[in-house]
Length: 273
Image (cartoon, rainbow, N blue to C red):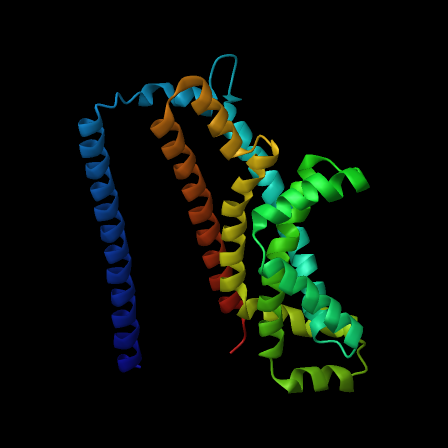
């Protein structure tokens, strides 16, 4: 017991040192970046106007009112949230189709994956917006959501398929021996275990989705990136606005990563030994 206590204390100490190391590395990186910015702006003779940035984030006159950048961030959240749900549904359907006994389902899923994964997202976005959207009469918002969903869904399908196939065959055989049909088997036994295993790569894909959503500005959707472009065109605050936009994207992705790390630890705690 004493040995276990020492091992636990040693492990916690190493984790603490690791966290301090990450904080120190992050601080050094930020300081180095600040130094490069200061040196670069001095040589360029650039007149920084950071004092103008807060009004594009929010105003406090007559209560809190979001500025253009926060309004754009809300649009980014809506597009990302809807795309995330649809990408998961598309990815799950594709993964199950690839593992089905139907040759037609496997062929369709394979063709979809090859087409999406081997063509640029921007081209797919333009194709859906300029060709598909007028035919089915959908708005630019939903055209963007479907483009992102189909693109990310192809990658999500491979992640989910890897998680499902990594499970022991005994899990499938036990469910079948209980007389469970495929849907209850996947819903109650297979998918909960598979998703726990693939949570880290799914998180990475969600973060990629947040960053990829910036491309919807090319079809005139006023998300965070498009609002940044509009402000820069009006004010010429190029560096201040784009650094602020980058910081907002960084804050969103870091928050998402921390939330999923918390969820992952919570799931591991709940897993019986």
